[in-house]
Length: 156
Image 1 (tube, rainbow, N blue to C red):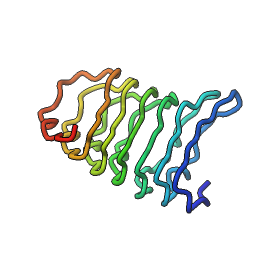
Image 2: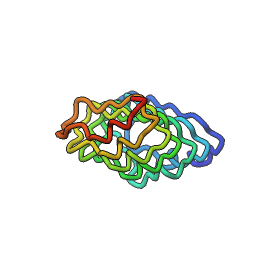
Image 3: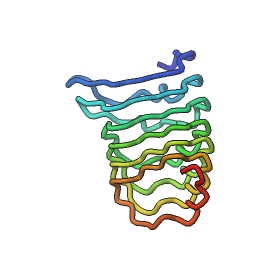
Image 4: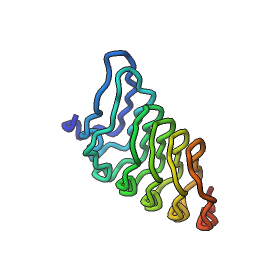
């Protein structure tokens, strides 16, 4: 997959009893890839690569990893996606705290993190996202009040 250097869009909807395993880390390292859409994967168990370096792709604008039952925490490296405008991690089994690095996504317009098992507080750093128009953190296990920094979210 790493040889597809001109690829700019990737959509995977893999269904069937014989599909499963770890997604290739090379998918997240394609320099010209602007769109990754991996949704509703069924069959055998799926996982994200342990060594994924999402910040290696400076062109990525849209990342959809929804309804795949991916488990674990959202990595701090998510904040390295400097060009991402649309991030959708809805309906997985993501756990742990929301990383404060989410507040380092300068181009983000849509941030969908609902229907997971995320815990803790909403990071005040999300108040730095001046371009944010939609934030979905519903159906998680978040315990905090809305940080005062959210008053800065004029587009929300």
